[in-house]
Image 1 (spheres, rainbow, N blue to C red):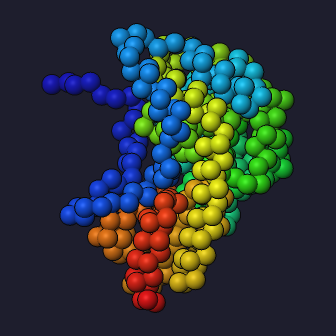
Image 2: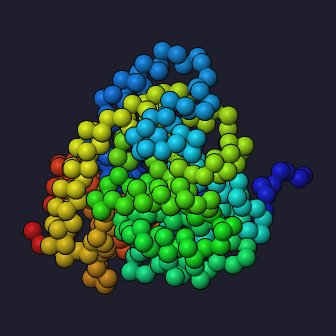
Image 3: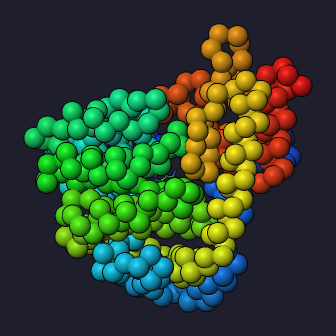
Length: 364
Ligand code: PMP
């Protein structure tokens, strides 16, 4: 008997696997596997969320106007150039579906965020993967991969899972080398954590061109991962294209309300940045001191490389940490079979991981 089959290419996709949540048999778990903030959400966001719960029978505003206006006000942008999605994951998917078709190519990098490849393939396109250099985006490699079939380039800056960053001059050079018909997607999920902040210049690159967009998220610094809110700054033509293909009410009402309140609470964001900066440095130094190589990060996570050859593998470390309630992220699927990614957490979690890894490395 014949049964329905997914379109060509769909069964080649490896479904996204989220970070582990549990450590079997351990009462107190510190989840450091999904780059979530240890500081929760702004109390103002929580209050707005609770208030929205009193009118759940109503459809949300399909334009998410309150949220787009709040984002625009804080960042000095025009709300007409802001498009919101159910997490930035949804934005990445919509961009691929609107700009790619069968036979088209999308460029991603070897350690790039897995959702890019998934969405390029789901849209019927072909993901072309290029090498990175020293765990950083390599503009020359990306440009060398462009063909007449290229429609989209998807990069994260800062990148996940490396936590590295290329300066805006390099991003400008990348853009300058791309044909006008190729859409450059700058995924800036971790923008708020970067101290050498040339994200304003990145936004200018969007303002001045028709083929650049920047995606951002409320999942990281704003602590609203559970509500699924992403936003994009984009030329009008891109916003209009995505308005045609998105779901009519792609953001829920509590998310719109909480997001608008969260982005206005700048003191909360500043405190989160401070916490992260201090602990990012301490964690990186402490792990380096016990002989682990840590990729220099500008984000809220670090990529920890384990030594080759003496049995102290990332896999064993993962098991060792999980038994003690510390859940990090295995990143084999990102091309790092012998590394773990650790989110910068609260003091207790950070100190716990440092102590556990010190014991693991045999240098108590
Ligand atoms: N881009 C990158 C680089 C990420 O690390 C993440 C979070 N895993 C996302 C996008 C998706 O974020 P969200 O859908 O929660 O906005």
